[in-house]
Image (cartoon, rainbow, N blue to C red; front, side):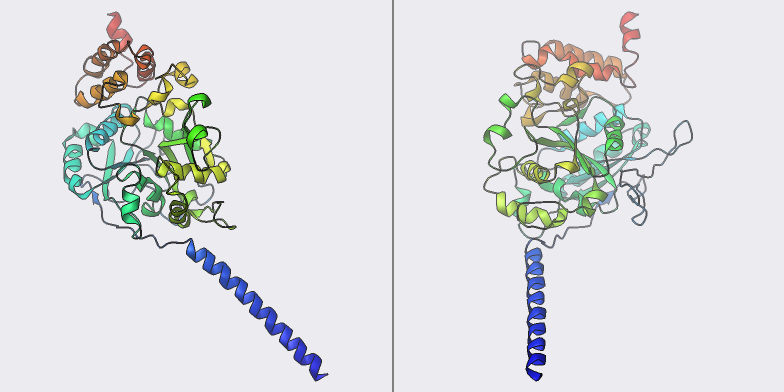
Length: 411
């Protein structure tokens, strides 16, 4: 009898040891893919506005759906509270002028309150604040802003900061840095709004219960697309996605677990980034955008794809028009990637950028912005993009402030 008791005890001990071993292995594997991400928390907020992001407090944010409905500082004509738009931009190196022009285009066209989250190198903080604070009071009342230092995980900080373009990968860490912000619109500095920002922001309302981000396709035409011809890593869909204009439900991104090809268990966003870079850094070309493509390749149900006229780039017209939504409705967001805002390679893009940069607040929008822009665009018809540059101004004509154009020209 004692032999059976001893055998039973021994088997029980062996089973317990086996269970403990398996649990320890799982913990070790997860620990290896869960880097400690530490970020600087210092920032500079404009003194004319409240220092806190205008969002729901952490204990109430996204309690039910996580659909990006932030608290707003004003009400509409029906007495309903409008949501504040949270817009994030990262400006490093020589990108300050682009960032300022981007913000100018946003406040020119939009009537909804906006909160700007500006990430910049330390030496740019004072000059960015000086420019924004110099804008007329009637303009500044439309927005508040905070300037943050650029910050990356303590490990591999140099590698992250130089990935593709200086500081571009900062966008990957926004869910962990802006912890009290529910939802966010991130845009590259080489972007200009040609329609009110709130129209893009309202796409959050199209998210289903699984989606936590929205972007446009990288290409519309597979025959000239990059990812399906050259990528050496997984990418989203048929032609990939472009991360230059990105709606991010940060609350959902912080909560979600993402499928991946490194572990059998889902990883949180902050657990995923470092091991993803370590695995693919020798195979990626477009830096953080490639990492985003890899993530949503494995998690397509978490992404909403919006039309190309919300992220219109030279590829949409350089070889002929291939953005159907722009042909039908006009260009809503102009993305001058590859430096086309600053060269003569695509003069139609440069014409729009120069017109925004040269416009001074307080001047008449039609005579000081619209008409000079049309004159510039008329000089670009020798290029493919210039031949369809009326698509650039079609959306502007529908925006507040430009509705007097027809009256002015017909008088």
